[in-house]
Amino acid sequence: MKRLKWPSWLPIDPYILLLLGTVGLAALWPARAAAADVASGASTGAIALLFFLYGARLSTREALDGLRHWRLHVTVLACTFVVFPLLGLAARGLEPVFLTHSLYTGLLFLTLVPSTVQSSIAFTSMARGNVPAAICAGSFSSLAGIVITPLLAATLLGSAGGGFSADSILKIVLQLLVPFVAGQVLRRWIGGFIARHKKVLGLVDRGSILLVVYTAFSEGMVQGIWHQVSPVRLAGLLAVEAVLLAVMLALTWYGSKALRFSREDRIAIQFAGSKKSLAAGLPMASVLFGAQASLAVLPLMLFHQMQLMVCAVIAKRRSQDPEADLTPAPAAESRIAVGTGTRSG
Image 1 (spheres, rainbow, N blue to C red):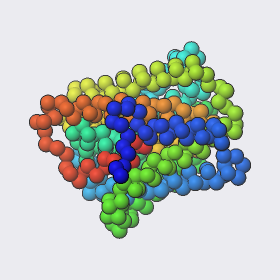
Image 2 (cartoon, helix red, strand yellow):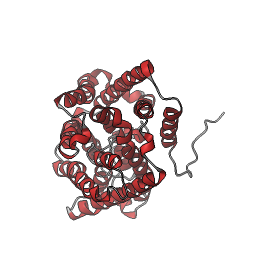
Image 3 (spheres, helix red, strand yellow):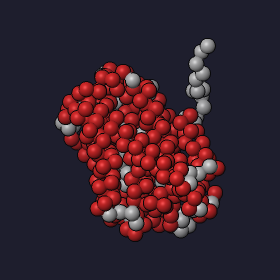
């Protein structure tokens, strides 16, 4: 029998449906009491494992080679941690007409988290861009975000990010950075195994995100915070995020052109500089916001789904540009990232 495949003409990625289904599961059967403690511990362990695999996948040689392209990485970091937050601050004027204070806090937090790794690589490869640069840019952004995101949250969110403290940074470093470094150290011995089982290990990417989403939204249901969000407010949030994504896609594409980057580099900058990581944002939000994390990550979840659908369309069109036929395809080894859980980044 042939394996069933998701119809290519459907605009919604199946992983997005799994995310929505996980939210529905948390609404109907939220984890409570001892079950909540088990789910919280499991999600913490799953995210640590996820970043361990990120470290084990990234070639140290690729990372060192990527440092040579410093202009591209500085551009991506500036888009992620300067331009995005400035747009988030500019959106403050939309409160309280379009957004409640809680939704605006979540929107501002969304602008502070690092870029994606896996999906940036996949879309850059699909569009025939500079894949090694996308690998390094996404990885550098994730590592920098472990420190920069909590500091920005403390500065811009103030009392809204009430869970922030020196202990918060320590928890984030222990959960994200330490496993990443451990993966790098052990890559010499386990790198080959991970490369051979990339499809199976890709399930860890997706599964860990689903587990964290379930834990966060279960806590929100138990705390009874969902009565604060009306359908009208959600529609307003989606409209604001659509504008935010459109602005960043335009700025990264035309801005990098003004800076005279090559077509391949512009593709990497657009996909790495316009995206936000659900994998990094969720555990940070759980530490920084505590019981309010589920409402705080709602804008990030919606933006994550939106960016995947829009960037998939853009990447497909970029791959069909006549200009793409005039440039050599990315190195074959760089394509290993495609199809390894790229939707969860």
